[in-house]
Image (cartoon, one colour):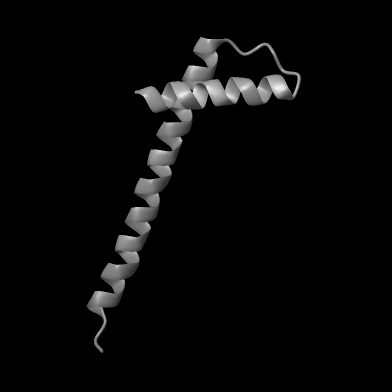
Length: 62
């Protein structure tokens, strides 16, 4: 997944700008992977909440 490597590079660059130079390429890729996993989890959670809200409205009489 190319986007993961791009995000990892951006993360490393941003940390270097702040004087943090101890993050390895592998560590930044692992962090990027975890970020994408968390985003996916949040998207699924939000979609489930929207579904619950929509389903609740559909059950109520007009």
